[in-house]
Image 1 (tube, rainbow, N blue to C red):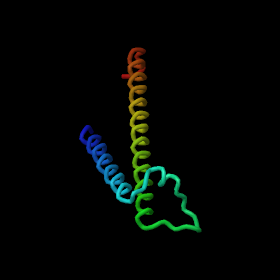
Image 2: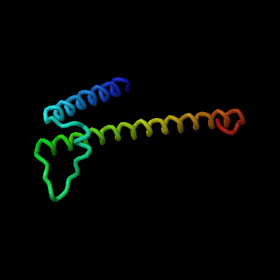
Image 3: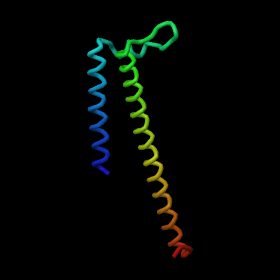
Image 4: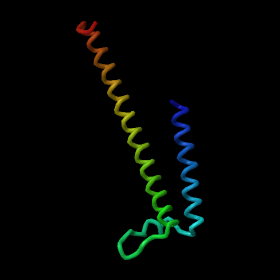
Length: 96
């Protein structure tokens, strides 16, 4: 499990570096990317669209990681509660 966590973290770091390098190559700041809005009046260049999509990808990846951590936390909490319940049942003689 530790190897999985480390590989995910290092994978995220390396992909984030690539994302930041692409933005830098476009001479765009993060604020410029955040302020850009897609609308019918103005079309982004292919490079700008790629940078925007990389930002969306990074955001989605981080959101997924947070959701998985929360799921694991809830699962572990439920396991702990079940163990406490079983222990109390054993003390009362109701659980063999």
